[in-house]
Image 1 (cartoon, helix red, strand yellow):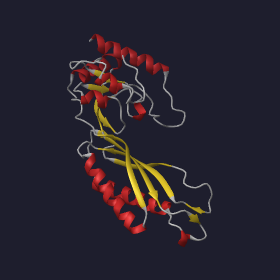
Image 2 (cartoon, helix red, strand yellow):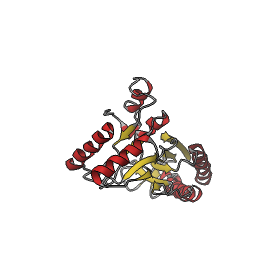
Image 3 (cartoon, rainbow, N blue to C red):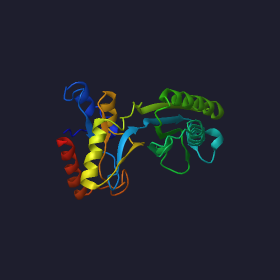
Image 4 (cartoon, helix red, strand yellow):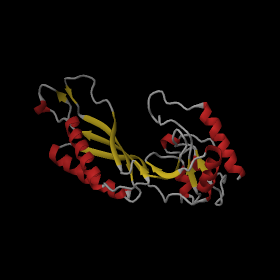
Length: 254
């Protein structure tokens, strides 16, 4: 059993050192990651989308809002960039893969940093973020090239300078086979202990299963949980923890 740190921020100090340096795991191991699930435990995650987080910094010229001709509104240019990225990326990368939930790539504008403190100031700098979860069929390099083309278009149209930085970039790997040993053992245990016939799925969220799969270790992601990820008052139920432990023990003894 491994309890690891910084799964939410790239695993630089968690599972990656264990896989790369500590010689903890072996090529013939299998792994279960309890980091995704459903309220009844009827799904086993075998695939994940690629992850691309973008920080977009737009630089214009600060000024008083009553004299916009003397300023260059970074926020307005950033809004145009957001809309064009949103429409173009959803349109071009529109394939559907029913293994995944949701079955398409997603491109979401999320965090926005404070630009100015008062209403009557035109911001000279604007910083925003996109969270992109992309079906593995699409190389992240292609997405980044398209983002760069739209960036240059906005720079030319609005006279601003835009810097785009990938603050997280994880190209996903081949999925775990639904017929792999770890998935089959989980199915057997869930059928015996819960009378379930779980189905394999793919998700948009990222887990440490990515790093096991890159090492060629067959990995299933499974647990029983209410779908509360990143929502207010996120919780887990003690009853689920106990019942899931029974499933893990059954798998280990199978």
